[in-house]
Length: 112
Image (cartoon, rainbow, N blue to C red):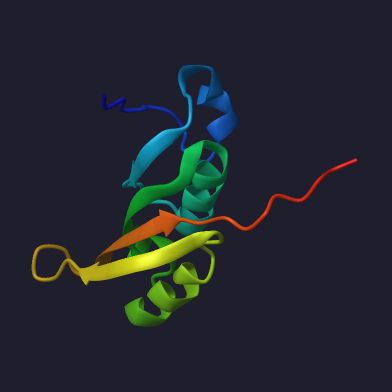
């Protein structure tokens, strides 16, 4: 029951007709706003208690800042996720981390 989505991950509304709520999101994109993309997709598609595996590439976010500083900054952008683990992928990939989280959003606000 795996569905790879070959689309622009920054536009989750574009592939909405293809998906129902899911148990796991695996995101491996080299975009400047990786954490924001993950948060958007989790908010739209991930079931409460579902998991996220985000492959975070710090040099794709900022080439001038310290990779660890980028990691810490990006982690703050993962709204609604309870962090379960952060694994450094060195020596296989420098300045890359596998960030594991569980979707645990707060109560949804009612809109009028």
